[in-house]
Length: 129
Ligand code: HEC
Image 1: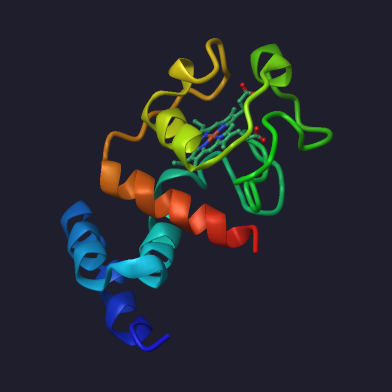
Image 2 (image 1 turned 60 degrees about the vertical axis):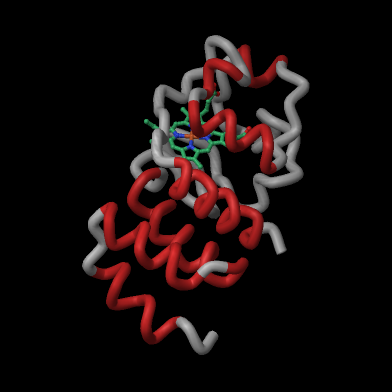
């Protein structure tokens, strides 16, 4: 964790540009995860938490999980009936435009920035370990 002291202040300032700079400066899996947590908190926690349901289902360990399987969460029929299993490729498409993965999903959100998408997916992968 030698990178952390340098990175946290950068993220604290986090404009989009700082986030990109931090991502580029750190690189590697560890950097992805740190920047990914920050991006997750900025982009996803309005509707999701790692360990409890909000507007969206909990996301810890979602990489490798079958879609629509958090028990008790009121998924759309589209997600419930889908055969999707969340991996990095599918998540990349999902965050770009959920409708292209599961038409009629209730998740009305798109993340245009590819750097943030990659960082968030790397972070979510770590939450499953
Ligand atoms: C505006 C609210 C909102 C935002 C913001 C949002 N989501 Fe969602 N998300 C939802 C809802 C609602 C669902 C359930 C969709 C359904 O049942 O059709 C969902 C479902 C999901 C699922 C499927 C989970 C499962 O158990 O099958 C994943 C993965 C996901 N979101 C990831 C993300 C990530 C990562 C972000 C941030 C980049 C994000 N979402 C941002 C509302 C949101």
